[in-house]
Image (cartoon, rainbow, N blue to C red; front, side):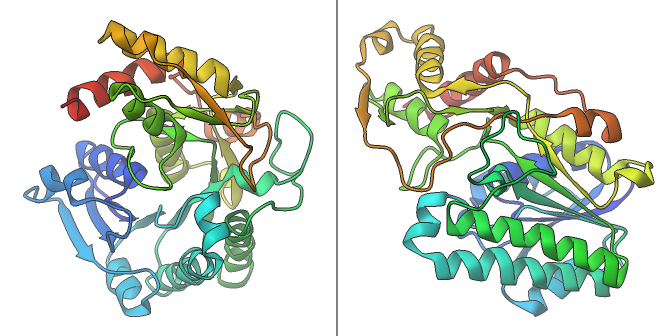
Length: 325
């Protein structure tokens, strides 16, 4: 990916800002669209003076903002969304408005602007109550939360826009992405940065349930690789598909908390003395999640470089250097 103009929606967010950085490093022009509902200016401040970076303050729920952002771009990386299963349970209407209506606005704007390809953030939550492991792209269950419904509807709309308007799309089903710039604060913080900041403050992290729920935790650089492959592939058979975006290994929350405590303990031995607490299971949570990445390897040439262990080392180092006060 070089010498292209790429729109990154949600470009001030965790994943979006990392994508903006990488695209600019590869000599592309980047347009960032963000309303800063969850994105942060601090994630992109260092890009603001770069000649190849343009920020548009706008909302994907506004069709004019979507049309403006898509004007003159070659590709769209659609990352903007309201994440979090608990947030969607508390406020399903706003989640639906952003994740479905906003997604449809972006698809329509991309179609009208004749962009070459629309790559979007899908979600492993789409697998719902399916029992089989590992998760294979063409076998899903019923959604377990409003958030999961919205992300599945995104896939259905993307498929229709190819069939009806010939807009090429690629959906990336993210599996528990973590890494630098992921926000540790707020009611809906992801589990890894939340645990990290609690350990740093000598607070006892609370695990939902008995800690034996498991996830395919995926380091941010693997996700960047998948996005770049989806943008740049010349394999036409790879287009208009959805792909698991993961490492392909399962880690329980109990294993995760021990690994985090050990990594942080290298910086501050007192962290190893912090006790772990357990609470009730969380509504809408899938018990186990593990991705098959065979399809991504076969059609996109995906080769994830970061295991959970390697990713945690990088993430913990970043949090320690940037958040320790």
